[in-house]
Amino acid sequence: MGSVDAKRKPRPPRVIEIREADNAKAFDDFLRVPWPIYCGSPCWVPPLLMERRAHLGARNPYFHHARVRFFVAYRGGLPVGRISAQIDALTQDGDRAGTGHFGLLEAADEAVLGALLAPAEAWLAREGMVRVMGPYSLSINDEVGLLIEGFDTPPRLLMNYALPFYAETLKRLGYAKAKDLLGYRRSTAAPLPEKSARLAMRAESLAGLRVRPLRLRRFREELAVILEIFNDAWSDNWGFLPMTAAEVEYMADNLRPIIRPELVQIAEIDGDPVAMIVALPDLNQAIADLNGRLLPFGWAKLAWRLKVRGLTAGRVIMMGVRRSYRGGFLGSALALHLVQRLHDEANAVGIKDMELSWVLEDNWPIRRLIEATGGAADKRYRIYQKTLSRATPA
Image (tube, rainbow, N blue to C red):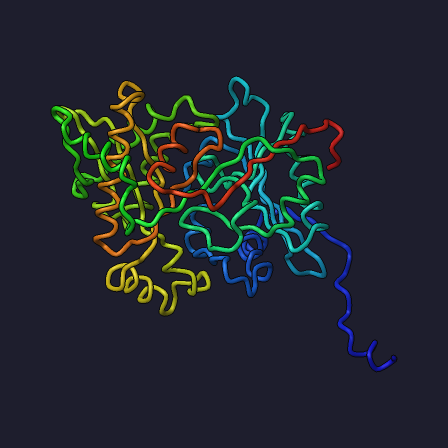
């Protein structure tokens, strides 16, 4: 018996210490927290550390209108969890007034997760917030929601992964569902169902219709057109938050290296842009084995995979039809025609599997449209909320 006890690994220290990541060393710990947590997981994709460091730094225009605190959990001197707490001035209106956010949540176990939420909630309460919602990493225009279904496949570009106990622990700690988001998958190699294909073809008879790919040489102009359609189409949706001019520029700089013009289709009627669909190659497929690093050989591997070998998966990140064209035959025909055109182009460049995400669970017009093309929901993400107590401990 004594020999067995001698070989048993010592239990990890129970004391969990939470520190604010307010210096370079602590921030580096914050960035690297996920690695030991997901060690050995076949579905987690290590993010590029260089990109994460930039995105969570002053270069991101989100910080022009938001206050953020980063917290790291330590046990036995080792980082074992992290969380962000943020207050976005652009969301302090109407029903959203008094709502703070949490995000970037990672934890080695339930005890760590609970210990992290306490200081995040306390800071938000001290700053006058009456409720907390999340995860937002950092806003609804970034990675959003916590994965609660679909743990058996890796996330696509700009989507997240999580361990199942996160959701269970949040519920136990008083967090309730605010909204669910869905991710749909569809094979671009499979033809559209007959009914949808016929409706997509009927769009070709619309007077003055022209569908074209993105013009890369006029990228910023094209991006402005796409966002104008998006804002018009989605402004009345739950949680909608338009991007600032600086955020649009920031997004343009980030997306341009991976944009494929044929995967962005814009529909015009008599020269007026009325609908669009935007897909990106799944960068996660290219970086999965780089372990977050581009040096010394990661750059070469990434370039070869993007430019030579190509990727076989993609994600539709944006789709919309102007409100004046929605409803009835016209709106459905335009949307299905864009889906058909995108699938043809994606299939031609070797992208055989496309995710359409995310979609609000109660956005039935879009859900029905996707399902009419043969898409099937295979991932579910949840946004949680909780009322904050003024007595929340510091």
